[in-house]
Image (tube, rainbow, N blue to C red; front, top):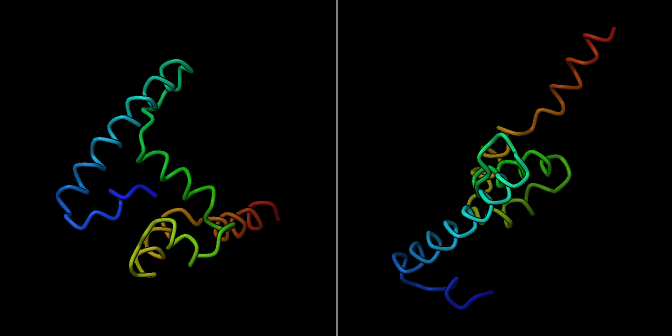
Length: 97
């Protein structure tokens, strides 16, 4: 891990993140344009995609660590946006009766 990631000054840390996220977003835009992907690729989209894919495959405590949430409730609330498997299966059972 980069020593700057353990920076105590929150202003320095936020600036560091902002610069690096902007670089990654620029690279993702190039990739999206090259592959003619119809949506704008960003770190935000990547994070949500990861959440959608990983939701029922990774224990919630591990997700909390990955997302660096200090409170498990934050992780649960965040993941509730993406966890539809149980609901989808229930609807499939009704529709496929």
